[in-house]
Length: 304
Image 1 (cartoon, rainbow, N blue to C red):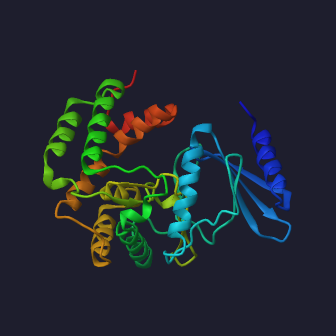
Image 2 (image 1 turned 45 degrees about the vertical axis):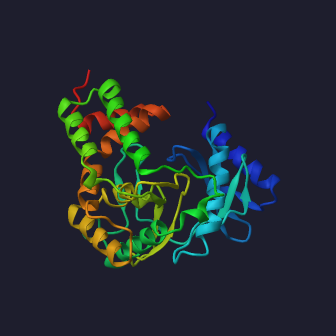
């Protein structure tokens, strides 16, 4: 396994090879991401830069798709998204976006450090988040044809949840009550979207940037963008907040023309309840045992 210093040197060497003039003494490694090594560093002219390198070779296609997605959404959104100066399998580099994450996770304790009020987030933040989601979800799907992002239909969305339930039963040891609740949800057609839409895919507070007044200034990490379940977008965007915020986000989403359906609210509530299952399955597939254990604790699975 490479040391932190080796990883930083590798990213900085790649950046120099691509012609970036950086102050290497300012480099700071950020290892909180699952898919990418990240270094934050200042350029000689004072510009702060983000350097990313994939942790695995199988992310090459995802990198190309993310690049195309950013080129599509960048000119259309009212908030900033990364503008990649360098894009390739060995390095992604772009000037850091303005603002700070609405919440940052401590990599040791997994606790969130909030830059906005979690219990009563700024009205303008929720409004801008809802407007962003409505704009993404309203994208004409033919415009995404050549991006290379995953595309699922409503049947595939439900089948993926069914497979997640089975993994929870066989590998996480979830209680029968979780399995029964999930099967009831699957069987209720009212609670599943009749259409799939373009989603960011991982719109949690750590990927949303805010200014000191709580205004949404940018959105990071479009790696998980896909055509998929619109309800899933709300899970990552809202579940770190309290239930009143969930309802505010849903209300603003509808006001901004988001493609809601009558069962959306109930779908979101169930998806938030089952979020620990998704975390556990992702932990299993990505080799992250700490997330598997966190999921088991939240699902009430006996330890040992």
